[in-house]
Amino acid sequence: MSGTDGTPPSGSGAEEQGKGDPTPQDSGAPDSSGPASNGPDSDRTVITPAAPDADKTVMRTSQPARELRSLQPGDVLNHIFEVKRLIGRGGMGEVYEGVNVNSEERVAIKVILPHLAADPQIQAMFRKEARTLTRLSHPALVQYRVLAQEPELQSFYIVTQYVDGRNLSDVLGTIEASEADMRGLLVRLAEGLAAAHSLGAIHRDISPDNVMLEDGRLDRAKIIDFGIAKDLDASTGTIIGTGFAGKLNYVAPEQLGDYNRNVGPWTDVYSLGLVILAVARRRDVEMGTNLVEAVDKRRAGPDLSPIPARLRPIVEKMTKANPSERVRSMEDVIALVQGAAGAAAGGARQAQAKAQAAAGGSSRRNTMIGGGVAAALVLAGGVYFLTRPSGDSANVAKSVLTAGLGGARCSWLDVLDAKSNGGKVDVFLRGVAGAPDEVKASIGRLLDNQGLKAGTLDFNDVFAIGPNYCTAIDAFRQIRDPKQHRIDVSQREYVMGVLGQGADKEAGKRGSPVVITVNTNDIDGEIALAGIEQDGKMTLIARSKADITSAGEMTSPGVYQFTLNTTDAGWKGVVMLWGKEPFDEAQLDGGNDVHNDAWSGRFLGAARNGNWKSDMIWYRVIDNK
Image (cartoon, rainbow, N blue to C red):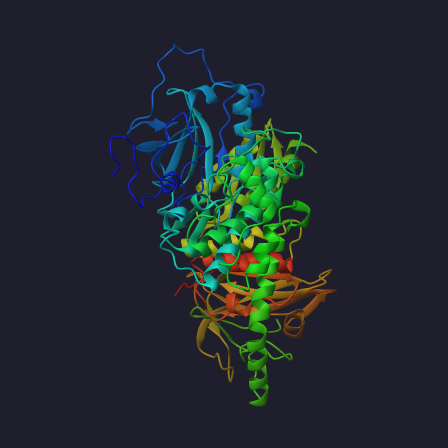
């Protein structure tokens, strides 16, 4: 437990504790509240106090004057977040461990200093930033839940995930990272930052003490402290503005005034390269103790000799002093790492292929569909077969929800319709969700943030699914193309019966045929289909257009219909991926377990490299026996 001075215990979970003892309240760089357990995502929104202009709202002062005080254990903010203990203090405020009293999720709460919170310009900047931060969703990023104002305690605060673990800075001296570990860490963090950059936010303070290791594991690293994220729109400001932000050892040259202060995604690329160097050195980098020395050392370039030989050229490109000569994006970093790994593995793959060819075998499993033959596919206890079968507010609401539902954790939803109804908007949805009630609340907030008032939210066609689906569905949702519905199912529920007749090898088995339709029109790349079962395991159903067209019946040009026969009950998902091949069989086949962030990171890296898109359908099989 923490002491009365709020000093956090070693190895406890909030992100601030990984930065050492709390700094005095009037010193230190901006910090942010800690990361978290895999709790519900119902709070990931921005609560804006009612006012004519949300971005210019000031804290209410009409109530009787009262002495501002620090929060105390037992305080409940907005009837939602109960304060448990003080974690630390920093330049922007105090950080507490808390809990959502409704969901029992552990959270970290940063209360902003009163003189900052009372400034209407700073409030507006926080709100603008929070609208971006609460949209971030990636396993390598701490999730921001809410920015809110507590009217009774007159507190302005930010809530994030809470992570049990240590930060990278604390374990640099003891960690023993292999080349593969460093490569995995680089890709994971680059993928998380790519997600942030895609929303227009750069971190500007990537350093070992802003990387938390959940359960002490590199493959579960999370980037924290986006409190100084800078909007890429140069016409807008942030709390830090356009000046220096970050730690002297890890910031890019342009943050120190060089190269016309040209800050962008490449700025995080530079800092991430130095983080990998620190992991290889097993101690912090030494890039200057004062501004002049820091500028000189960046122009000279860091000593990269501790980095493994295959990674060294990549980090060298990431840490070029001149931003125009540096790797420009996290996507490019990922491509370089994957290219290096592919080149190293290429010789082994070629040798294996030759051996298989000599033996007359093939690495392709005989359960795959090919040559017009429909074969059985085992899927987590079930069996699948491919066989031939015998303006106005309503429109604004549709657009808002179509764009915004991508952030609803553990859900796959379609907006069927939206209708204006006496100043309100009725919304009709279809899909699945880990917590439908929380998604419904999030929809209400999404509409409210756009000045729309939610009427009836029809969830009659939204069904609750178990937590085992969440890792896969969250990964697929990040590459979803909401404008192209490529896959469909003839109905949502099927009742099991007896599969197969006569000499059919499945005669006597209980199951249900499920009719699936796939639209292949205007897809220049390849297509893959994979099924997902209740335990989260997946099986590749088809790896190419040829697999689909050979087993399906063309119902119209480019549209094919086929049947999946499944032999167990419960909710099933089928994801359709399209883009540049190859699709990774190891991640989509073999009944592999995808209940971890490492899988998600690898999948999303491959997806970005291949420009994959996804669509998904869900159906339920009922055993009424």
